[in-house]
Image 1 (tube, rainbow, N blue to C red):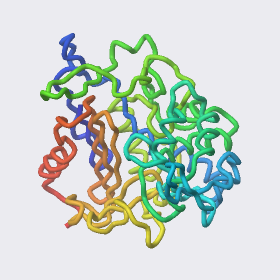
Image 2: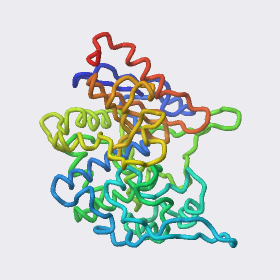
Image 3: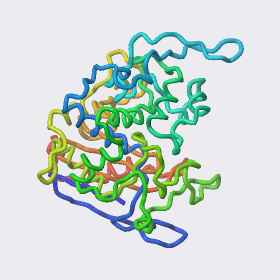
Length: 366
């Protein structure tokens, strides 16, 4: 499923293949997908709505609003018995660091370390946890790095989801619905698929050892047909290509769509500006790959190094095969959605970018 706009007009919308191979159910324009980490930019927008309302500053310490994250220790190695050695944090993690993945947190499922093991043992991201219980459990585990020292993909945005709850006084899901989904008419975006829409929900596939597609969820607890307690700001939403196009077009328009304003233009600009600290290490430091990180978006700083087209493009993707990018130079939004994960998944992201830009015969950036 791919959909694209240029100059605020749809120029491409195509669904091919099957939503469910075994049932021979075709992919349709209203198919609902697990978007996993494409939830993150939505959470970032929610938090920046509260930023505009004066509820916090980016330089504020997270612990100012979430005391569960107060006085965190930092992993400094292990002793002879395999126990973690810790040291004090050199400063309290800030909300900016929380939003740019430099706060010292990890994910538990994408890396191996004593801290990641502790995440797994604590059952973090369990669907039966509330957002408050998740943050309380997280606050008992040392940080993996000193805040501001390294970029590492992490549960930061799940913490942001709970921060939205604390700052707004309502559940995270209700805030998203009232402040983003309803105003933007994102009618199929939610933390679960209701019974009346299950016939539109795509089957998830993983790759077997022989390269075959196997119908299976990626995680044992990933049942998107049930309204679970945990409203994951980092990866819990389902959506359609059309809904996510509306969200992305709002961002390209500087926070407005169809007469509805979600954010001010300069607030959106803050989100896709490099927000990482000087001297930071890691994959989003700009060194060698031309990519930096804003507030819940990756940002192309050097399109030559990044093998992309426009400086300032911002983007992200989801573990189940969804991807999108926003190009302010060429005035382009592109959203793609499949439901495959694993080693055999085709490189649809690079292919779609190359093919789409080939079709532009009146480039604005040259």
